[in-house]
Amino acid sequence: MPNLLMEYAEPVAERVNVPGLLEDLHQCLLACGLFDASAVKSRSYPCRAWLVGREGDLNTFIHVELSLLSGREPAQKRELSRGLLSVLEQHGAGINSLTVEIREMDRDSYMRIHN
Image 1 (cartoon, rainbow, N blue to C red):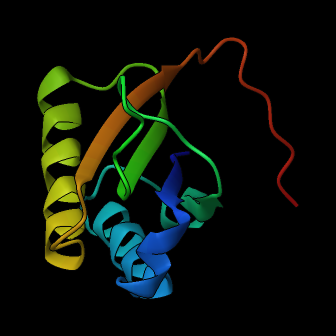
Image 2 (cartoon, rainbow, N blue to C red):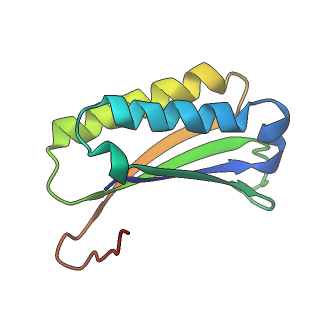
């Protein structure tokens, strides 16, 4: 049940094929062998306003947040981070900041209805 959220500075869409990048990130999750393919969810959102640092001068970024149910081994999470960052690097040449964050969701409190 991974949820991938890609957030990017609005100007990124002028230089990066955002739907293609999202598709490749999604495929990276499908190919890793850790998840039921039907449970993998990926989406992206442009960020229209942002500030970074004292000057607020970082003009482009892509940040990927991957939320997973708790219980994965640290090595599995590192490998996922590396794989996702590799995809970002392939698509995001010239983007000021590329980051990946993996978050664990508590299995006991996560609820879903899937029809």
